[in-house]
Image (cartoon, rainbow, N blue to C red; front, side, top):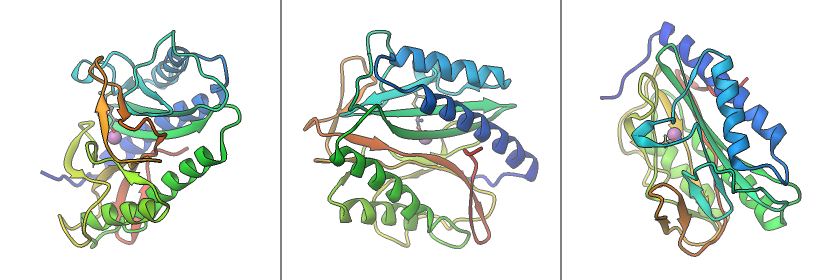
Amino acid sequence: MVTRKSSREIELMRIAGRIVALAHKAVSEAIKPGVTTKQLDELVEKVIRSEDAIPSFLNYSGYPASACISINEEVVHGIPSPRRVLKSGDIVSVDIGAIYKGYHGDSAWTYACGEISEEAKKLLEGTEASLFAGLEFAKGGNHLSDISHHIQKKAESLGYSVVREFVGHGVGKELHEDPQIPNYGLPHRGILLKPGMTLAIEPMINLGNKEVKVLKDGWTTITRDKSLSAHFEHSILITKDGYEILTTL
Ligand code: MF3
Ligand code: CO
């Protein structure tokens, strides 16, 4: 069931989203060569708890950390570790969720560590552009798959591939609510978008082929061809004539 949030619920989701954005700001300032993914995870947890919120991912289906931190060919769900030391040239996808008074915010961003290649820079810009190409169609009265279709169209027009195994989702009282939102597909399908719906839109885009596999830790997902992958996500509110980004300062 796809719910529409009340103005009180939306206000709480704006606060949860702002807390996620605060954690991202701290991460963006802390990412540099020599930092471990464990240190970044501790920073994320500290920011979230200092705002009276709880990390959404911690213990979710047994996930052991506050953030997912995925480096280079890792697509999503990288587990923070004191043994993972960032080096210059890495691209680092950081996915953060926070729950505030019962409501979740969820947002991911891929950061550059030090100096990255031109190819990597273009992938980050292209993945962010794919997210916003989809969001252009996030609007009351449009179909859900209009978002999906335009994400895919943008990513493929740049020569990249769209990961199929993970999708965007409704967000609110639960981290993952209906509907599921693929980052590919035909336009004009699925439910009609209505004001008050809250959605997490999150393209995962590969430089090479679309195929991925999960490592033996049961979480870390990498590209099969070991090409670079990027992930950009915002939680949004559908409005009458567009959308409002919730996971922002
Ligand atoms: N942020 C992810 C999503 O958007 C969830 C992370 S999975 C978890 O769906 F298990 F780590 F929570
Ligand atoms: Co999400």
